Length: 303
Image (cartoon, rainbow, N blue to C red; front, side, top):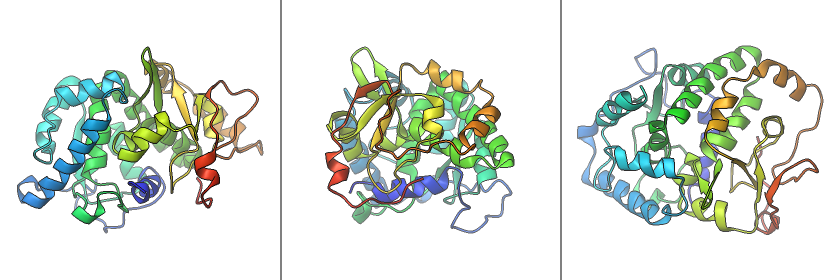
């Protein structure tokens, strides 16, 4: 399954566990990317992944992703240099990309986002791991996430998420907030005039989920509702059973202005929690899935 083990690790990276690589010398866990030390083979892996996704995403990725990719110093021939990426990002939205050794603790991750620093793994998968990886690498983090950071709305939303993550951590509410991140930044779909489009990085960096999320009859595609999403488990070991669709990126910015504290209380008051494939009477269903794909597979871990 293309990149599904990687997606399982994303659950850990985004606010649920400390890094596996040991605490580095710097308090903020950043390290030097070491761009000069990438080998020809590593640049070749990037090229293979880049060219594969570049063929799949036209007509599937949202306009903002395409524009961001066009305006950044990202190409097929070499792994991007974080310094060059940051120069362009800083001028456009005030963001920069910083290298980290792998998964980082919750507070470190949120602190970086709150200060417009996107922590990216600096390593790239091996040639035999193109479709199977246990930890998000530079391809997922840079190809999947960074183009959207060129958009001012997404730039503000991710910063607000970092600030909200620090608050949620103090309140012990990371589970609910992680679901919002998962169903937007990682696996969100956007309605554009031509149809549904990808803006989530977990989809945009996966060759099989790029197709499955939009074209398979199996998953549900449901209009995004914040409290509904906060109550909905997500699948960390396979394709999503439901994708939540926003009408435009401004909808995300509206989320960043909401006081989440009352929502946390309502969601945690013993009310219902929903399985990933459930469709509720109050849902605004864009496409009701057949569920055929997941019905034929063993159920795995949920969050």
